[in-house]
Length: 512
Image (cartoon, rainbow, N blue to C red; front, side):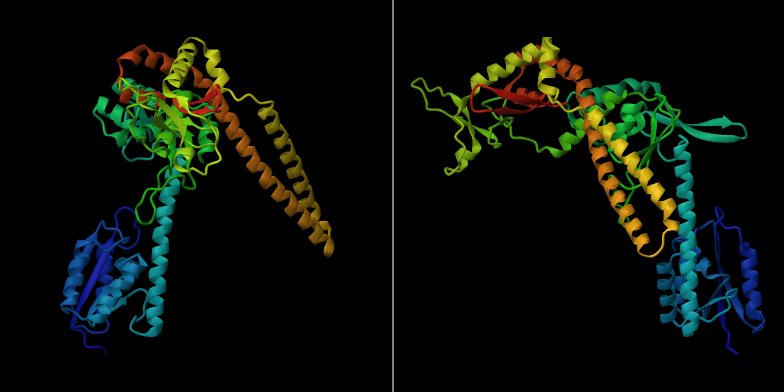
């Protein structure tokens, strides 16, 4: 019989999840276990109530381990291994510390000595199962939150800017939803209109005395967008699944920014979805998409240097695809110069094959401003530049692809039903045919996705022409009062690039 001097009994119970033995029962069972071996043994009790086994940051557990390192007792006893830790790494680290200090760990209900090879193996297995159960509990909680979100209910946490969480009575149950804070409505509308018109998050944040990061989070959050077919298609193109009836109310987003194991927030994660909720949405789908696209473009583009010679600096592209840089002409007798746009390829590489000539900056600026003045009063001019002139009928192509996919799917179903009737080599022939059809459908579905995305963006471009025309009108009304730096900044909110063909023609690509 082992000579027992002092036994530490550790007990733990989480009020939130544990349904097993109480702390009092755990302690008594441990005492009874050892008294059956030696009536003279003494005990020191350590108990943590209301603490999870997911980590070892528990006050009494930490105090017990400190005493163990000082070799104040010979044995640590527990009711079950999962009382010590449900995380296998924490358990193995704890066991290693005890082993180095000659302290034996005993699980009284699982009945083995971990100092033997078989006991050590069993202890590790039980700790692993305990961790698996903890992970299962966490997954069940996550799945429950997802189920609530799909029903449009708020699953907890800090509400987004402009909303508060409210409890709604539903029979005997209380359900959580979001409710719009009225004084935030105009502010949110101002933010989306500002970004859609090309203003930066920093600029809007300064006007509203808010962090720029908050502005960016607001723009990217589908919670402010009215649910309709247009917003549904766009969200699906971003990788979201969409649940619920599209009734103009707002979306709730789930798993939009999950964290990696290292704690870093992720984008475009698997499992992202939105569900139509009951809260009032502030922004119509066209404006929400416009602002969303605008902020994504800004994130992809580098900030250009400011030029003092032309408000079109960094916008003009040569027909060879290279940017055109500003080059001074010869100085006149009165000290003045004429400035030109010149192909950067020619300027930096004498061996360049590009033979595009130079274009006077003042002439090009006059032409651009003249076109903008015409577009400010005639919407057809913008449509000529923006609408893609093509003989393609994308909607017809989409319909044809869907038809082929449906036929292939029907063939697959038919082959699958007949497969049981074949034998020998005939089975392989049928399976090969099914694989071919399946691969063809995969390719067709990818083509269908691209076509639907292209069709969606064309629709958005058309809807945004009104916004673009309004922005041009506003800019021209104050143009003569702006300095060169502001002109250059503001014109980039309207024009993405100017492509010059080397002759008299140029084509403008607008920011929409």
